[in-house]
Image (cartoon, rainbow, N blue to C red):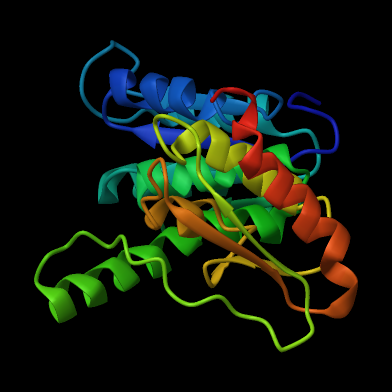
Length: 243
């Protein structure tokens, strides 16, 4: 059995090997311990997809905990579905094709896999990209600006723990610190929000476009969330070790 023991693997299927390899490199910056496998291009190195490459990638990513596959175009999905048809029944049962954008969904899936999320959790993270895309579209339609940077209002009932902190990183809350934030949020069994966004959602956090100097409200949604709120607020205040 290949892959990383106890973790779901993620496979990137693209018509271009450069795209698939590049996505693995990108996601690796935020998910160093997850098994991420590229399956790009044809067997001859051209533009297209390969049954052999996709089959091999799934095998390489599968530790027994499952595999989530993301595809760029329709024929990539067809190739992947064909590859799944040739898997043993027990392997096929733990492979899912995500209906999600390749880049946003792939990065979110990789971070979820890094945190040890199960197959359903990694698939949900990948497909959360669709929700974020719809939200961005709603903002665009309402404002006509497309910036999508409104912080929103903090959630949480009165009496629940809340801390207000400031982003000090010179590049703001970009991909790497956002991933560190989400990974830490996933270590707590309580729900925490950041300016109203779920702290466990990488895409939700990144969609806020928080820049240096932005005010961030970290709120727990239950009275026993103080430890989680403090840990996440401390991480922001210390600049994720890179400020």
